[in-house]
Image 1 (cartoon, each protein chain N blue to C red):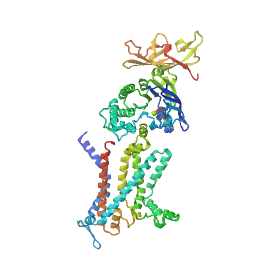
Image 2 (spheres, chains in turn red, purple):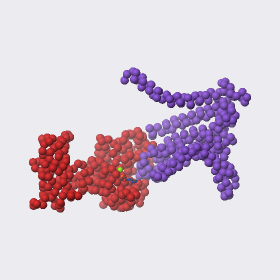
Image 3 (tube, rainbow over the protein chains, first blue to last red):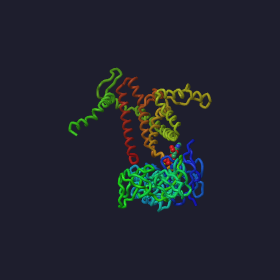
Image 4 (tube, rainbow over the protein chains, first blue to last red):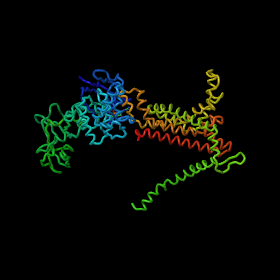
Length: 346
Length: 291
Ligand SMILES: Nc1ncnc2c1ncn2[C@@H]1O[C@H](COP(=O)(O)OP(=O)(O)O)[C@@H](O)[C@H]1O
Ligand SMILES: [Mg+2]
């Protein structure tokens, strides 16, 4: 049973359709990420759930009740903004207490819950600091505590970590995931960072130009991308132009000198996509020459010039000898590691 | 760096600011010092100004209740004007800030436009509308039978406060506007998501954050109103004098320059003390919140 449900939601600004036909059902306690490039409508979707924007079409339901009929102040959602939007004239504790005050929580209980929330985000002892006197990471934690202390039915996070430096971002990711696991709040995270979406979410909603490209677990979206956009956006990928060879039986899929039995249901010119870490060097296969070889500690990165255009290959640094720059090699992969789709305009 | 270069770079700021400093000393400090000195000179109807050092003028100002009343009126008018501009200007800036694109620039122009028109013209406008039996509004109201006699406006403190508030309004709106620009655009949504209604948002979230803007606007409006000349001169004339119009009268009508100088000096000292004092208070009060 869906906890939060978006049913063919769309948003238009004048003639411009910013979000279109957005349907999603979120289970209770689930961690969902909206992933997509800047301007694809992630924030707009989140703001419709929060109630700061009204959908042009479609319905949003929480536990079966129409959410759009409820005023944003009464929805009881916790929201962390990209800019944090802390109240600069209040201390950290006052910021966190604000939502409880609005709910007329008695003073003693309020103080107790504020302390617990600040401790949870690792800010015990910072109660009396003003936001301007805190670092970006600390402000981020206050914003999280402020959103969580009201025990929201859904936690909405709009690029919460994008203003932090790389190391802090990684720390906060782990912490965010732990906190979410502990308290079990249904969470929607907006991000344009695929690593962040992968490492945090139960499911990812990949968006492009206001439309959903794919909904799936991080593994599904990475390994079985539903479209070229998804495979390009989620990490590096190799796209080779291939053809179906019907002169032999059974029919074969051919890319350069690489060939394998053709998967069922494909015909004509195709695009073959393979992740770089799924390609190996073999005795036969797609002919290629190593252009550059880059050592990256736990793996090697090869840039190759293949029969089907440029290709990248990633090999684990497992102690085996690796081909040198300029060496001629053959690229091979298992048929189950590739995804094949029809080649448009050919 | 060599010693010579160091010396040169230490002198450079002084050399670069010298022209401005000279101008400052020449047209501000020297006349100011002369005015202060003038206030200690003697004056008589027939002997004119006598360059001696006496406390006669200061003694007169300190003991004659006429001056106390006049200074008190000056500051009363300035305070009321400041309150009025704050009460009207802060909401005005807030509403303006919430308007969308085209309307925003249009109304900003409407508010700032008057700055391009001379204060005299703007004040005379009020006189045309409310000036005695011939004022346009008064005539209209009387012909409609709403009023029996004209609204008292000319030569009243109320008239002066209203006209001054009109003249000073852009300074308050601009100052609050600047404070509003520093607000996080999502701050109201943040408060709303935590359950705050519109009144609570304005009272608990917006007001405390724009208060420094209101207060600095108030300092500007207060000091400009207390030292204003044109508006009090037109509305109050010689019947209802304030410090600035009194000093003017002493200089140009009575020709008692030393007394005028004493009035002007006292006004300046009082203003500087009030402005510097309240500025320090504001900075201390908001240091915690605003760097
Ligand atoms: N209030 C608005 N009026 C008009 N267009 C808007 C408005 N808000 C967002 N947009 C447009 O909608 C698109 C999606 O914006 P947004 O949801 O903020 O993207 P994202 O969060 O994915 O980066 C952008 O092209 C943006 O220009
Ligand atoms: Mg966004």
